[in-house]
Image (tube, rainbow, N blue to C red; front, side):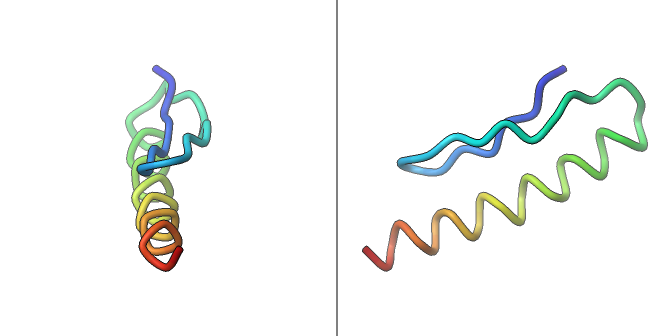
Length: 44
């Protein structure tokens, strides 16, 4: 499964998850990146 962090204007490939531990960590990182991207979009 591929994990992407998507904002209003950007998409960043985070990684591929093969195990539950990887999936949990990758989703956590993706959520942080999405929040940062959306904050940046709102600032523009």
